[in-house]
Image (cartoon, rainbow, N blue to C red; front, top):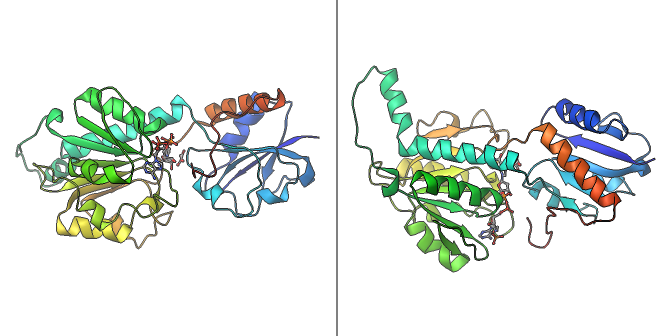
Length: 315
Ligand code: NDP
Ligand code: OXD
């Protein structure tokens, strides 16, 4: 027997189960918790936020497939089995996240929240509006998703720059890399987009000191922050302080230090903040099933898996 385990927490497993079963009815699929038989039968695991310790209970596991891009939750499990760990890399996930970034960059650039407030108050007043080519957007993280977002924003006309760990070249995008290049990158950035993985090096990077290094957006008076990477990258209290003192004119947050965002969080009611429930880049279950089954076939043919997480690097 060789079974595939599906263990997802914090969301409905049904669509993932249905997609895997319909694409591969011949395969034995076990749904955790509940439909799990002899642990030694499990060879592959498809997971999202599984409880730490769970994967270590399957002694014959050959590979782990993360349902999303960021595998920080898995890497934080001290008992994670030493088998290949792959993430999803697919245009479906990339372009959904790019949609989100473009939407929120434009929302801040066009001061949409200000016009929403005017509409609520039945006010007809036209404000000044810079062109995209007068505004500097900076993207932290120039990987699969950050790179695609940079290209899309550059195409709209924004002055786009990106910051990564190692050098990256993207046509039409000014690139910075490494810790020593962070300050010059921030100094030219009016709208900061975070698309970094959560690693020991990036944890709590977005704090008040970092936000104060951003360039003030001319028309808004403060800079803007969009975080669709991970909540661990930011210090929630410092973002609130930056909004309060005017360093930030607004923020869009898809991720938080604690998720789900507690009902008592001041982010919910802050008029300068847009909150979304970590849904910037949902992947479709059909696409996920196709990717995983392709990976399993590679494994069975003795080929190396694609899109492996590098455990030393942390992403
Ligand atoms: P990639 O692994 O393709 O890219 C990561 C980027 O971050 C790379 O450019 C990398 O640099 C850079 N980076 C990593 N560590 C550092 C560091 N210490 N200093 C500077 N740059 C660094 O990831 P993706 O683009 O696919 O996804 C990025 C993250 O976005 C995911 O890890 C996940 O956490 C998050 N995400 C969130 C979603 C949501 O729904 N909110 C949806 C999808 C992703 P280098 O190029 O040198 O390797
Ligand atoms: C993530 C994802 O990593 O949704 O958050 O892919």
